[in-house]
Image (cartoon, rainbow, N blue to C red; front, side, top):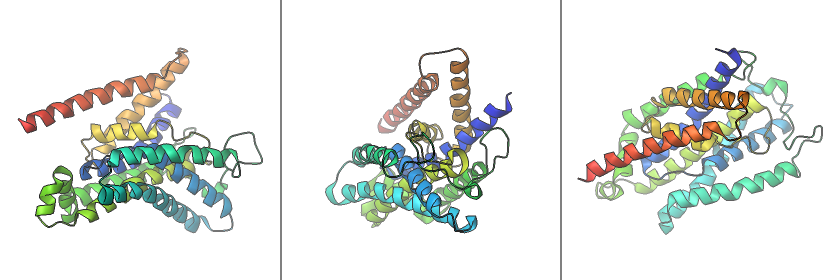
Length: 295
């Protein structure tokens, strides 16, 4: 197996794990977050701009700060949908998708306008400094430390959801908000925290894309990552620990199907086709389980 493509598949899997954990968190809360792509884009943009302006800071300070800012910015965008859900009973899925659709062209405009790099012809922000970049651990691929960080995050969220009182209450709220209300749970807490964390994890995915893979926020880098991450969450049945094998599986499917399509000069996106089939099969299985549950 080619070392480059093997490493690229694992690197892509790390991004799926991080964003997929955010998607799983939204699924557990019952408020599906369909704004992942815009949130990933925003997190990557914030991270890239901050690191390009913070060259005097040591990496041990600048990188954590950039991750926090990316998490917070995307979390706040998602939190807007949570507020609309709680106070106006607006559909979270719909508003999160609309917010994502709105933020993407704004970032495109900023990248092609005032924040575009002046030193090259890319539609991208300036490259971050070398000392802010995660080094490759399997050259010549982009595989880096974010793969191990992603697995740690998956483990942390597994413990949070399945081993804590908050996680158990969140799951109950996601299954039946009315029952949670009758049980005197603070439902606003679950709406707001799940929205913020879900959006934040997508933003974190965007930030890790910058420091570990692209080293700049270029136009459209997020494309496909959000929806593929949601597919991994469905494939893992919203279990963060199962997100690890499901992300690796989808990472290899995406990478090697694109490789095959490129080598054989296919005129269509083969990986998206395969992912669509997988998503349909998963959705059909979930639908059948839901029907049996109601019966």
